[in-house]
Amino acid sequence: MRIAVLASSSDGGKSWSPAKQVNSGIEPVQADENGPKVAFNKDNKAFVVWSIPGEKGDITRANIRFAMEDGKGGFTTAQTLNEVKDTGRFPIIETMPDGTFLVAWIDRRIDNPQPRQLYLMRLDAQGHALTKNYQVGEGLCECCKLGIAFADGGKTVYMVDREVDDNKIRNHVLRKSTDGGKTFAAPGEISNDGWQVSSCPHSGPSIGRDSRGQLHVSWFTQGRSESEAGIYYSVSKDGGKTFAPRTMVQGNTAPETLYNNLVVGDDDTVYLAWTNIDANNRAQIYMRTLAPDGRTWSPIQQVSHAKGNAGRPTLTLLKNRLHVAWPETDGEQSRVVLRSAALGK
Image (tube, rainbow, N blue to C red; front, side, top):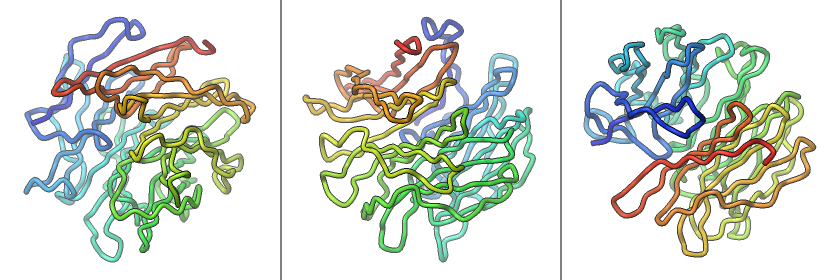
């Protein structure tokens, strides 16, 4: 049985606090693409969401759990956010510019005609519900993470997700709200990759917004042929109305699903990390940067050197440093690894 734990560092990752258990009791916390997500309020208190299987152990009919730091060295008692039992999974939580929190997940409370919907709810800075669960989209791929970005002080909300059509074509879309996430316009396709696959790849997109208002998106697809498989990037310079033709960041070196994440720096540099297979057939973390001119990519750099396999990378920028973290597994052993670098180095 897994538990959710949280550790913190006040010196840029040189040392870490003891790990604290987030969930109230032992429960089967789901991992990988569906792993716990964290956001912080203005007082740096952690707000954590995660997913657990439903009452009958069904991972496709799960529940969204939430807890926050209680200011006493622990966490509040975990609560379930989805109002209809055994329906939600793959949650994400993000801090809105006004200090409240937006929680989103993939939901299955309605099975016909579209069995997977996008549901949201809002929490205040004390973790209290500001809204009930509400639906803003449908037709989502059932197991891919979501991405969120804000503009206009939170009045504009951008969301990206992978959709699946009746022919099992799985492309990514952008959803835009101009009323703080209450309602969203019809989704717009980011790229027509033509990837037809019967089951969900468990590899969702990533989105970031720069100081000029440009939207940067990365994702994985196997495309229409083996030569198209890889990590891709695109940009929208008109608020998500259109996206530039996709750019392959790195081709797939083996028939594996790859995972990606990006962040955008204050100077509008894009930092993109992903997994791929090395010469020893091990999953490793790689990254590239895109200069603010939108044209100049750095060489590909291998960041991890795992003896086993390195997993889904997460990036953050803090005090002029880039931090990249990922889980590694080696047989029955696992650990979380962090590497940091001064920006521009």
